[in-house]
Length: 165
Image (cartoon, rainbow, N blue to C red; front, side, top):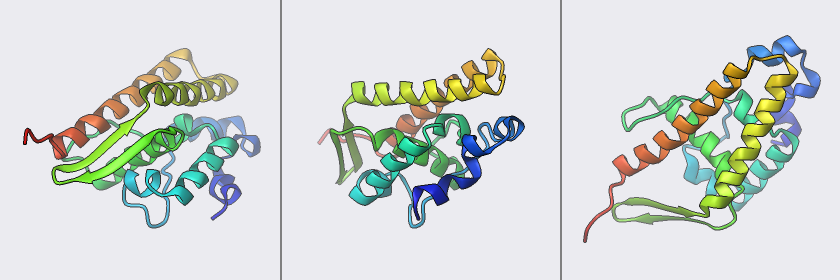
């Protein structure tokens, strides 16, 4: 699939303001054959696609459906968080994802992740302001993104605890 086909229905340049407003936090983005974050961040082709997607459609933080997750969250909710985290982590150059006897180990450049996340949130805020969304909605979305990211890492640690061996 090419980027243009992927974003056709959610391209702000082609939508009326009321359509943009209705799609705030309502879009589920799925990649064929992807079951989780590792399928995207560990695959060079998928990372390349996600980076191209971001260049053409940098509003993922505005549109994507997100909710904090836990170790027992339903699959679609976990996948929503995984896709968003993949979009963030695909832009982190120093990323190490390794399977260990205890689960999965993920190491990345935290400063680079924070910079890219700040860009995603800024673009989401610009789009929200363009369709006259109240600042409280924008602040609420930023808080939801932060809670979702924190819960994603917490769920990963709960499912893959470090071993003292």
